[in-house]
Image (cartoon, rainbow, N blue to C red; front, side, top):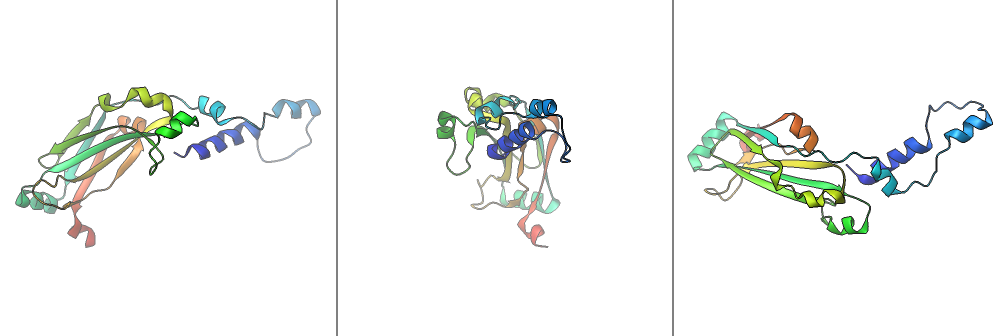
Length: 185
């Protein structure tokens, strides 16, 4: 979530309540509706609820061809969950943000499977001391690849998962992997 878009949306909600239709308003009613036009980002951030922290359950499936390929190479499945958040407007939070992603990394959890299977990502890897530096929900990405222990290149074509931790905690994440040859077909 882009904090500038969130801030603009909140400011628009405060500054422009009601519908788009214009009518002659009584002077008293018009003055009651006018909100301060220069609300700061910090004030807008206070309106955003605190981040939800929850464990995540993920199920990784393999197509028959992907399963056969991994077994023939003696390869495993690597599942990596990365937690991050949008930085607050403060200078300190902005300095904590990654220069490439623009987000504050809160933690990472990597698990290896012998093949298809289920994993549980507990929330204990999240650096809770950094939660005050983010605005909004924690973002979760899950990336699934072959573990590259037997083969030097990734053998799996898996969709990239990215949702808020709150959403991921309410659902069972399902990631279906195939081979790159299957993707080309």
